[in-house]
Length: 241
Ligand code: UDP
Image (cartoon, rainbow, N blue to C red; front, side, top):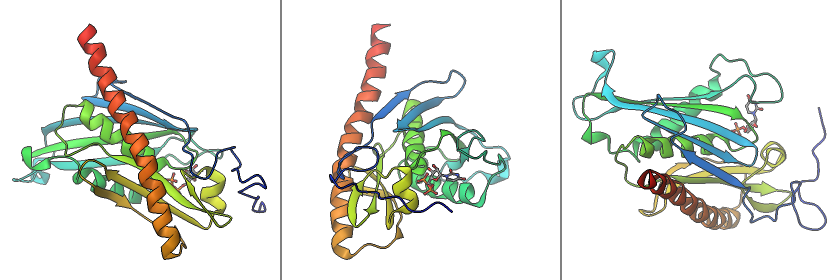
């Protein structure tokens, strides 16, 4: 096994040159697929996700439909070429868990009560994995849902914070995710102040947790603005046409 590298260099910077409170470069685009009702691509550093949404549409098989709300069916999947070592395309336990966690996060975003007896199907493909894929996938899915014209409470903005060599850091890269002391993905709907997803792997003191949450909020605000810009740009383009 490889030895743990130093994650915070002597100059206080991280292995990818970022300060502890800096995000990776991000890119987002909606409406990237013709056949889906809604779609989006989200890139966070080298992590790259494609999401597609179908629905609300009649539920098949029918007996799975609910009389009072839409059913969300959600698949998070890593392509075999998304990682260094070929990933087996069959769904792993991790992918099944992440699909569930992402579904629950989307259930509190989407106004599912407005679409009884229907299904909304959400697919996420990890095209390139470099830490933070669950959150980039959730954001891509949430943008694709909005792109599909499905009513939502708010957009979902998300970022992981954690601890590397004792320093609280924003938006973990892969070595920090692998070797750091803590990894805490946070997703929320900023305008209504609701958390959609919060997980913690590793150990943080209560003070580090507070610091981490503060840092996450800072990142989430920046990401939220980028999401709003992404959607506005799409509608500006449509207007021009
Ligand atoms: N990873 C991988 N192969 C796998 C699962 C994960 O290479 O089968 C890498 C990938 O870069 C991923 C990172 O490990 O982003 C961290 O995975 P984790 O389970 O912490 O979820 P994530 O941070 O992607 O949400």
